[in-house]
Image (cartoon, rainbow, N blue to C red):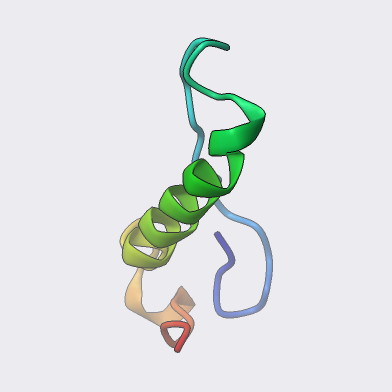
Length: 55
């Protein structure tokens, strides 16, 4: 996740077995990870470091 200056500050991770993360489900996992990242991208930053939420 990027701060207001565009620097990477934290990164979400997905952990599961290879039986769960299959080629067929990759896009689903990516969608979930992106949604979660947008939801929490400002939480670890103090207000002055935050960037506006993505549309």
